[in-house]
Amino acid sequence: MASNEIRFVRQQREDRSVLEIILRIDGTPLTELIDRFELNAEMQPAGDAYGGLIPEFFRFGPLEDHFHGRSTNAMGPKTPLLGCGCGEWGCWPLMARITSTPELVTWDSFEQPHRKTRDYTGFGPFQFDRHQYDDDLRALRAVTGSGVDEPRT
Image (tube, rainbow, N blue to C red):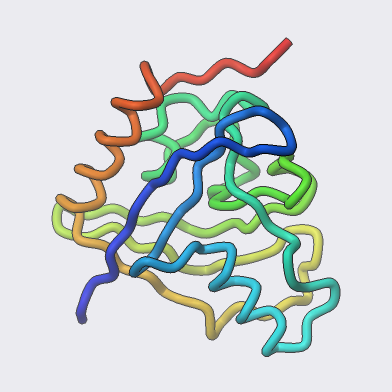
């Protein structure tokens, strides 16, 4: 199976004056991919509901752990990949199972935990080359600092 390309992009969020992490799969923001899927599936509400993750708002722990599905502060066995458009991941998150092997990182079993009846079976799975995935995570960490982000007080 061909693998997807991942980019962890850190950008300034103008409305909140904070930095957020935007995930891009094969060049397209994950927010756009999920919007298209939910709109095509006629889910309500849908469209412009998601935003990137804002480490300042939640103690994700080391980003490498979080994006390998080992974040100790997540909701259950799945990991938030997107937060709400308002900036809080707990408000309207997109969750997925993250599985890592020496060769691949796979995102699958997507869910919106506040709408348990939604069916995301046709979304993903996304598989990434482990080396490319880890290289991009290291690049994110280099611009983020220690990778352990503390929430604002």
